[in-house]
Length: 422
Image 1 (cartoon, rainbow, N blue to C red):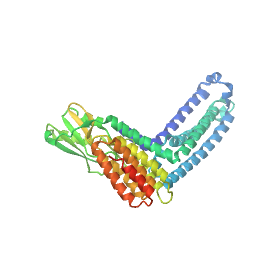
Image 2: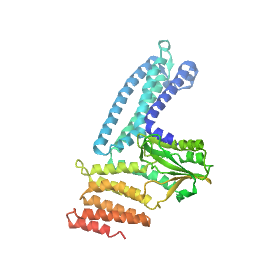
Image 3: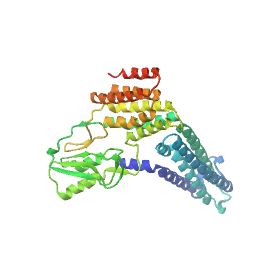
Image 4: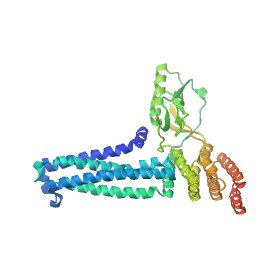
């Protein structure tokens, strides 16, 4: 299921186009049955729904040209928006725009409509020129549907170029992944290796970003042999072929053929791909928020308010994981076997989320104050161990910033924030 989600995430543009082409074929089949094979159905339809074959042919010809033109225009609009994102926000966010449902579905709708109109003309031949048909009426209804989708596309474009909504969408996606991980969180102790007589390293057979781990399939493979699989690779990490993905441990000696088969099967449960996916990786969305914040503080824009917004969103996300103890997580288990995983620790996540933003903020007191306030929020939600990490990081940031800030009022503002760390 996880592999299918990642595959769909990377290919859903093609899926939508194929989906609407198949819908057009089904529509054509229905029209053919009604207009040629079962013409008695015409008597059950409203009279205004029927039109002469030559008029239907003219309508379908006009619609096919219009849909092809609008499809070209839509593609040009998508390229323009992508260029805007590249220059104003983050290259990584282009993927989010392309993967939006309204973006790729619109192309699918137009391609499907063009396919229907062109093929529908073959249904209206000279020998049926005096017949009443519904092919043209269906084409008109499809054109109305296309217009509704185009309006939806325009409204989506308007929303997608607003900075606050971009940051909010990334925040919601990251928060969803974090909440799912917290719900599945099951603390477990890392048993000593001495209890297990067999040890085998699982090696990556391919290179790419680790986007998913199929723990349910893993537990089925080792569920009845008294074993433990400790995953060393991390979600979102780039894995090079030959890298150790994890360590397979079993209590009883296994035959060499059986052991090799299990190792190969476990290796197949890691989904590696050339592109990162935010389906299970909240750090990827954090990275995109950071890139927007850094871009906002660049020489070309100087938009500190966007950086302040990003800092607060990052702080909320980090506060959600700051209260979790740093133990191995049991992804799946039964009476005889267990799949264990340990992702990035809190200190690594905190540094990953803020180090670029801190460097780019420089001596901007508004951004530094927002980051310190965010640290205060994270500090309040942290475990005792993580509180020390946050407090130390905040202190280093304060000492670095206070040297560059010129006015006494700004220095007092930062000092008042630091005084709240207890």
